[in-house]
Image (tube, rainbow, N blue to C red; front, top):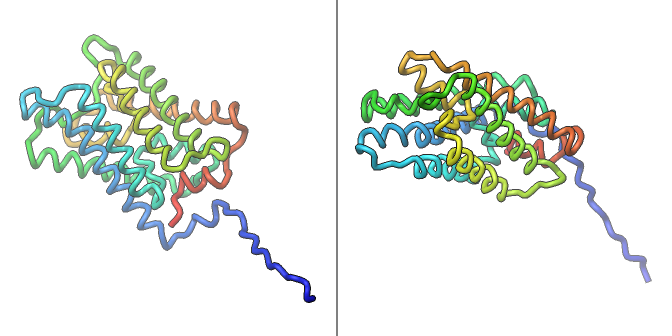
Length: 254
């Protein structure tokens, strides 16, 4: 009797080079523009529509809408670009070793462009009402207080993103639920303090069209510092990054 011969195919492990295909970069950058447009359209648009409708969009609805939109974007295009939608997230992935630094400027530029287009759309639709949904410290809140709040909130956000993307706790599509839920939760308790932006691009769009950058530094320094602290926390919790699920989450699979 002939011996049964079995041929086993061993699939090679993926690494960052598998995702670093420059021919697909235009698709990933378009994904970041497109996704950030919808995120900022909802996040900033809630304030604009609230002003236009004389208070019909409450704070709870506004923060829930932003979280649900992020959840939807991650689910429909996370596999294309990683659905960063946020310079702090891009910097966090790069500092963790899951995303190449050379692609960071392109991603951040795409996010800023998407946010600006979203705010331009709101301006054309309704005019410069509701401060175009600008991120501002709350009444009686100092810039330093708002900065510290943004730092802590972004520390939590990027920790959730890095944690759900790691090989230790890779939860696949449920990551969208975790990230969207965190954004809504952060807004529910902290938006009266700092607007709970956690995203320099989301804050950039309204400020650019209003030509008012008085508080913008808060929404750069706070989120980026929070993202870098999240990278330190991720190292303490799980060691170095760069594992296959994290690379897939950061860079997409197309």
